[in-house]
Image (tube, rainbow over all chains, first blue to last red; front, side, top):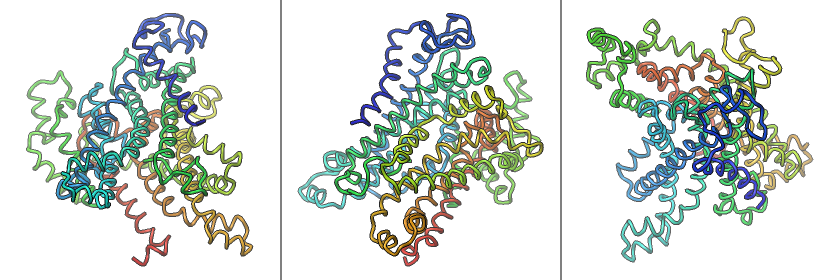
Length: 281
Length: 301
């Protein structure tokens, strides 16, 4: 319960700012509103940047791209990855071999380098970044769904269903998928955090939305060269990103402890509920 | 292992060739005349079909020749990689070892006293450091230690002479913190499984000191995941520290990768991919082989 409150406390304010920013922002994110480098005050809660633009407004608008890219690419990669993983695990054959080989190839590549190369090739704008992050998340869902299907498909209730005449789609969607829903949900929660980070890293490197449109990563990149004048423009965009990722990690841990029977404290009394297991890679 | 590296090289080469965008255009610039563009295209051998180019690259690669960079025509790819490694390899090695040692010590202490203040501190702070954006941490460190206090330089790397290592302290610090959190969580979780096991109770009953019980008997159980984590951390750092290298403007492999990706430097990207995936493959093979040394139960099969 404490962890749920903590996670909500970390995720909701930042996300609410971003959603509010769709309808209303205090100042335009691209116009000069005050003297440069004002520290946080009532009229500028996050201060102003090197041009005198309001940092709060820029953070509110800048989060749109991060959240949109992250949710879209996690949605797409989880659906596609799960479908491919279920198919590969259930039917096996040459398809399984090819899909697993491709996944291993992708996983052998450092994730951020992969995202960078893909984004440069697919286009430096938001579409390229979204596609790159979708591809980069795909193997995780694929492998999870594949391994789960392999271990489930020999179990008695599946065999019973098959011998009662159920076709592969019925078995996959009605019996196997529901049993994999919890680990997939946990994976998606962690992946959402990682993808927010990856999106910000890519925009830090200059991909995605281009200036003067704000994005969290690009704001940090620009603020870095003004660190000598003011610390605040480099502080707040990172803080909002960090609290979202931390909240999602805590939420993921909580979901795993609640949903995954292997980590349920009742089965392993020696294991304290916190710190159980290690992060999904 | 060889198949993975070969497959990745093929995929990278194919993706960079097949998708829109033109390396020759990037090299000559948009103003150049059509003749000059054609000449460069020929010189870079971009006019040949892909199988011919990849075949020749492969043949040369087996002879230790990775070709010449498009962007830095004066340098062979292997020379650029060697220079990048000279910066990135020491960073990756120091970060991996430092975070392993500190992480294991913290993890063991926390596992020995579950629920203690230190343990609670670890479980909260490790979550924090695992979630903190590395580049933001780097910027905050620059803001505090370079701009405010003036203790360390804010970036760049002048080479190993003239106390070059002071330029690496902040980047190493920024990379080590999340990895300490990772290793301490891993150790803590593996140790928690065995601390109530019979062989640990026996070791205590024999009158062994608590330190010996924890570090010799219980920690053995965590060795295999730790070795796997160690290898993966190191290999990932070789090619994956690129954002931190950009924050601190270090001329390592990461910086090279960013330039190569933006400039569509196909030979350089190919060389980098082969190096990095080769490192991942080699490290995981080495880790697999070491399991037999670490765990007698594996030796029998």
